Length: 151
Image (tube, rainbow, N blue to C red; front, side, top):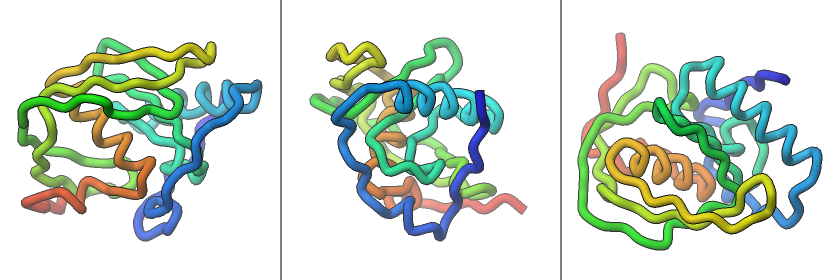
């Protein structure tokens, strides 16, 4: 497939709310494949469509053992708290200490237009929250209590 250029700050597309996907068609399936290729090419563990300049509510994630594609993802349950280091392909060389829910349940569509729910804890929960934030124009630096820049 294809590898996209990752959009970086201060590009305004990263601050724009993505639109809901209303039809799953060949173009969207190609987008999912290309997002997957892009995420792996840049050693990411998650990628949201706005990060490649596409304002659609689509994310792909793989924290190491569980590749997922989520269309119109929505967090329907949160529990607990975890604080940890986050980075982002769209903000290279910057990391932050971010508090997020320890456990989430996310409702979404899969590539077959079926409603699915994903129960996630720890790293997967963090990645899902981070990527879903991208769909609303929110970056991890907006939530970070501490920012660390690589030299």
